[in-house]
Length: 212
Image (tube, rainbow, N blue to C red; front, side, top):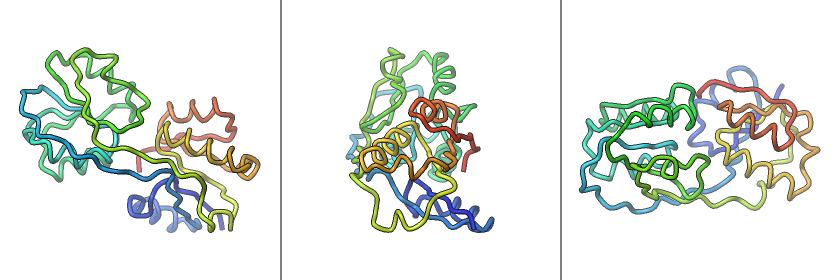
């Protein structure tokens, strides 16, 4: 039986777990950070669009008072689906599941845009676009080490969901002398940008996967 490591919580990985278990994988979930949601004030000034690149910022967007017909630019089908369920009607999904491809679309927006972001981001829209205002919606706290159950089995595959997660994963396994533990693991990346970052960090067995 093959094994897979999912680098996020079990609650947020139900669909992936089911998919892998149906294919006879032994699955283990090990989140790389915890998330603290931040309180966000209501947005009272007119905006033409909003950006959300992580499902962790969904709650802030939903509570911001933004009109449901506002154009929402997002990365990830799951995030888009949650926003649809919350009543947002005008959602624009990144064509390549990346912030880079989302940026190409945003350059066509001339009005004010708000960006619901976390404490760590891999693409700074506010620096690249003058009409973008940031709203800090959540912060992440990296774990120091993996759980005691982590080393019970070797992992054939490791699923990585963001560039930030890739960097945290590398830091943790380096700090705890676990690099050799993953020599034969295939690193599955959710976008080409994540894959390229993983390659830069020295991972050899890499594949890009579609959105879960």
